[in-house]
Image 1 (cartoon, rainbow, N blue to C red):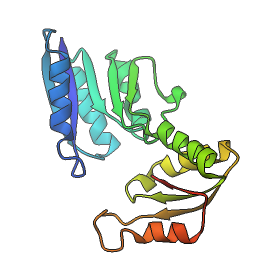
Image 2 (image 1 turned 90 degrees about the vertical axis):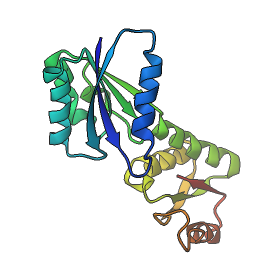
Image 3 (image 1 turned 90 degrees about the horizontal axis):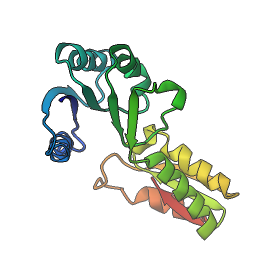
Image 4 (image 1 turned 60 degrees about the vertical axis):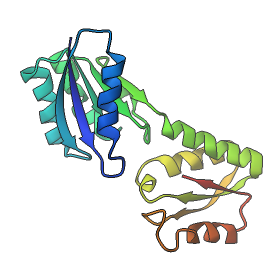
Amino acid sequence: MRIGLLLASSRFVPQLAADVRHWIGRGLADIDHRLVVEATPYNESPFQVRDKLQRLMVAEEADIVVAPLGAGMLPRVADLAAGQQVPLLALTMGEDICRGDTVPPSVFVVSFGLWRSAWLTGRMAAERFGPRICIVSAAHESGYGLNFAVALGVESAGGTVAATIPAPTAPDAAGASEPVERAVALAPDGIGKV
């Protein structure tokens, strides 16, 4: 079996590419396979990702391709799997929801489910602490649907979001506690951290 692996490098999680390669190798230890790797920078353009996926599917003749793809990238490249008749195993953190109508049957999504976890965090915060919740959001997570998921969770329990306050980019930056202090000053029933 020939397995195509698109490995994305991340400056935020530098060990990610090595870990993915290691664990795929461990998971397939009992299966005769050849791993074909195509490296890509994190957040590469859809055109470049399509090109690299197509290279794995066509030029390298992969039987299956494994690739870290977020909900924004997946609909832009998923048609390749159907067109080339090569299964695509899309790995995602689940920071946004992959809509079912954007994923053909030849694409399998494996997700950590961060969006669902964020929704549940909001719901539990409103149920346990009270209906008025403040969200403190890390800068990197603010660009995804996690704040929205927490808010929907709060609302599903009959609560409201008093405010969403962004935190500094670096957690050790001067003033990192300032967003929490701002949230406390609003006197919410609870504070949710995303």
